[in-house]
Image (cartoon, rainbow, N blue to C red; front, side, top):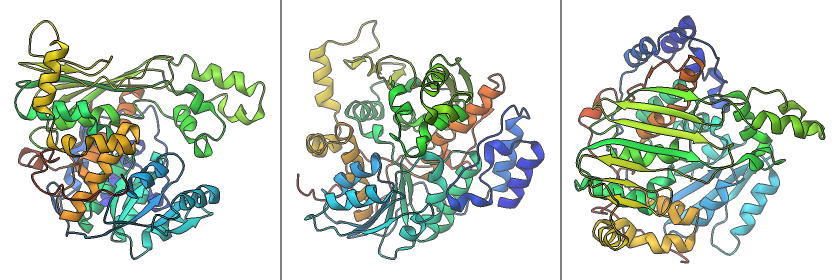
Length: 481
């Protein structure tokens, strides 16, 4: 099946959307080709025909793990945050740490001194992460490397009997999405993309409100990841191999769609009663990235390789239509001087909600937002049990205000109790697919593009996941908090 799909991609000239190539186990995704204009609906039909679902991972519950042995790949920015969270959860043993840079790996291990964790260190060369995946006493591999490496590492880890929790995005090409799905179904191993914003207080509040019918029929959602990261992107060695800057200079489209999109998809029951059908994507021109690169290069040879890159536009706006007729707007801008926002707008037939600009607001379907007193009353009524149980403790532990800890605690709790994870592999790849599909649309005059159905039609009958009521589980104990 893989050969058939890959040959089709080459024949149609659409390899850029699907190419992971034979080198996927190296963890390096090919960059997409541009200016290819065959119909993606034809591509999607072929992709779906060539994939036969081996096992429906939606609702899948793996055998219980009393103790979860964890290995972490990538110890730059996100890895240490997850170490902090995992070391504060009972029934977790951090067995291995990996980073290509010895100083990062050694520093991470040093922070665990006296904690009872004594991980094996893997470092020094690009392929060393494979040894971590092969280590026998690891149950869960946490991947926090640059996102173009995630899919190859996830596939390799699952093929070596490990569950996977990957930072966003899970896959950078459509072919990678399918390879991750095929591997998860064949190995029956969890592969969760860690969309931490799904665990924000307001996101969980509105999810509970939606499930209890407060908003009526959900009609529209608005979401984004907008944050000024110009200085960080250009800072020397802020990110390994200047990888973020390189991505902004090589790709178009929404290259970071997940933080806003994940919570909206869960509110709309995407992959569980509805699915994303197609999208169109429009992008502004670049105002700033190219000028900054040229200015820096004129005074510092380090920046000369970045001076002539074709940087993506500041703002990308993608519009998604679902099979049930809903719409989603998802935006990305990390290069304009403007305040941070994920928007998180939910609009229904009887009510609506909007998180940004702060303060968050709720409407009962009237022309004005409810008063702050009424907002607090609704908050008390609809705050779900998961927030009541662990929300304040998570804030104390930290990690993006506590959402990292809540996410990691619930992941371990599900593994301890043999429960389905809050986000499954189909969520991970469908949300991630917006990256390459939006790129194709931008490069093809904003033509519409079908979004593959990675569930192979099971979205019509799949049951809802993410148990925010803690009807099952919720018994994993906290440690050092």
